[in-house]
Length: 362
Image (cartoon, rainbow, N blue to C red):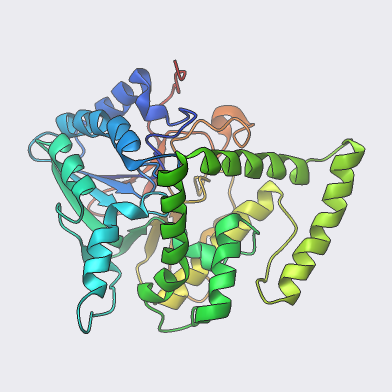
């Protein structure tokens, strides 16, 4: 069986940066699916933070229809939720919690095609392929585990919005324990924040989320820039480490003020390694997305992608968002859209480029 794993499609993004809404990339992707038995959509498949869910689903349904046609009646689409489409599984997760004594959430649970009305719509669109749902991850093979990677927001040292929110929740609920943790421990810190963000998207038409996204990108450009900068920018950059120091002192951290490309990569890998060890994931290969940074690529140091103290190796499937701010190196950039991970019945997973042209928003 050949499995293709893709992550972070963000279908329905308000600024139309999601490349699979463009005819050229979608056609190229569908052609690549010939000969693939199973397609794993590894989280943030649908952008539910930029407006009402119905708007994102309207963009997603024709894409799912094209993918289902390409895979055919014998094909399977596995949907794994991430942080931006966590609401797809909220009814199912709440149903579990409503039980008198719900069992702990396991590493790989089947939500079923009726996990929510939105999932039922996507399953209908994906026919003749079969749509299944897994959360918080899936064992692609006994030695290959795949999850979106949003749990790393509880552990990363980068001061991103969701890391700060998780830090505040950790002051209330307590930090995720270093051993014998369960997915429920991570959900306790993250799910309340997701529910709040989803409610904002529904009530404010996504404008708040888009403004926040734009502000975050602008701040990263400003704080990570090198060379001459305006006086105001230099002043803000000089104050930023003081703010991080303050957050660390009140127990929100540990956080770092280093926002360089290397820091983004290293912090993401270190945090994902922490997720692996805390959850006791023993798979030899662990696949994730979330950070939008594909790898390991040929120029990457292999040791950075090894989880310390375990036999696990990390792989990131990259993203399908056209983000020129991050993908400054063009097609060679690890943030360039259109990569995936191939998994066969044996052998290590492979990071591959699926599409060659991003097209234009139109």
